Length: 305
Ligand SMILES: [Zn+2]
Image (cartoon, rainbow, N blue to C red; front, side, top):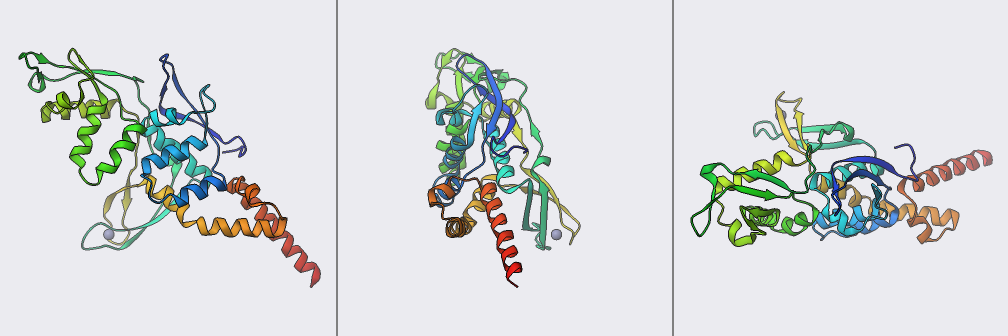
């Protein structure tokens, strides 16, 4: 957090495995400028997964030795890695504190509860094995019955990434079961001796087999804990609060679009800089100039009186 111009460096909990098998975990992020703030604040209709790809492509400056980072690489990042980067970006743009107000979920209470936590306190679990492919064995009961009555128990899968999320997330709200099936079709790369089994074979896996595969996937994946324990001071009970990171992050940017334009106007008016120049600044820098300007105006007012 020290050096604003070069951004911050973080360690991805999963990491990007390049085509030679090397894992890259060191990620350097630059802060959003007014341009990205505007772009994101305006893209209301975009699915949040493609929005995440969009914003990370602009702000992920370096990944290990990869610089610049192509959009395709951002799309290949695991879901938890993308969540981690978004958290870091949130921290750089708005600070580490998160303040929100929710309703207590207990039906007999429903009181307003203030939530206040630091992004730094969100638990992050690193993946032990980096893949990109994972082998597992189904239990005998869950074995896949092939057309020639053979039992296939060996499964090879990869973990869901941003590209999967982009394709699946529009479906998720309408038909969760279908969305999960689609995700499995994409992530299961071998069933027994069959490579790239595709929809037809993956659909034939029993519910037990799917459950076992999903369990292995969850255990192998890195993880960002976005479910938080909260306490209602009114009724004294605990509840779990799912922290909707995407909604929260993009929601904050959206509400501030009006403010962004007013800040640009204010700086253009006093400094005569072009809109382009001001929009290229980071939020931090913009706010520094506004502060300096406010001090200056106050000093001049005092001198006059
Ligand atoms: Zn309560």
